[in-house]
Image 1 (cartoon, helix red, strand yellow):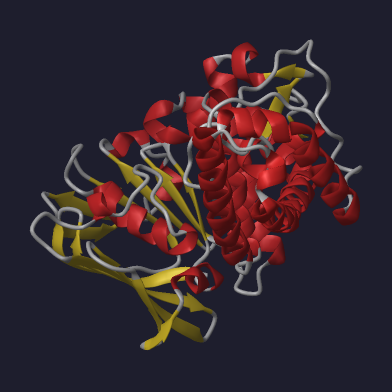
Image 2 (cartoon, helix red, strand yellow; image 1 turned 180 degrees about the vertical axis):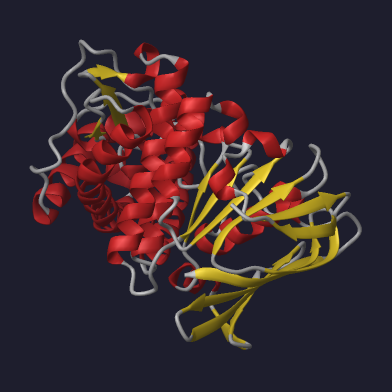
Length: 404
């Protein structure tokens, strides 16, 4: 799959932008703040229904405009699909597929991309919400219907939290909240599916993650992912959800091992979830929030058997984050009927030493389309500079092709 044409209207600092693209590598070059990242951010939004830089949509709409429009012509072989998304300041966003209205959550079915960015360091060093978001975005691209499951879970979570907060304020006991059991059932039903899907994904990532890490580092540091599930007793604090609010911290190396990815089964997960809800009911009424569920889970990243968060060096953390993105791309390539995802590297090479730059360029060279942003062209390995697009103040000012 590749983006054949990208069109933006009132998106970020672009009043209008039209860009023809093709297979192979393209580098967007420009000083910081000119708008090169905005181009690739728009492509990523169609795949994940979110930005890698901001949590809401309002910042994506150009100042003074009521809406922003992203249009991308996606090509796979002889087939082309026009994907369109309108982000509105007021009211719900709207989407079209080949000029026919569709639900926005349908778009990831037709636009697959994997984006590497400096912000990805937070996957290793940041809060659990960052790791949950990474998994969930990949899940939605692999199985688009899960976007609906996650949205339904968020609605149930908000309703249940509202009821718990009301009960706390009024001093009510669980026995006087018969509607709470209804929300409990939906929480367990939807949450169990999300947990099982995440655990299965973590298992699927194991082999491509190890291969990707070796391709970048040329060393076997045994990168691993292990699910840490709140239904199995993970301590959590704070209210969280799929919008990205932080949950509990990764435990130290001395803490109990996270759940084995091979153990949970759908019915078993639901039973454990329901028992955890029952056990934590008094604490939930006391605090007015839901203390267990996929919104409070984490995944522990390990190198050589130790948590990468706290033990890995800066270079190792970068390599782990890059390997996770590359492993995600490999899964999409393997499972998708539309071929390779679009690979996007947003200002990544400036963060890497020469050896890692060369290894990363070699690792991604076989993908159908690679889009790179850079402030300095010299940071980008030569094999990726086949086409260069210059960006200045929200305008595409020059395009050139080089012989490599």
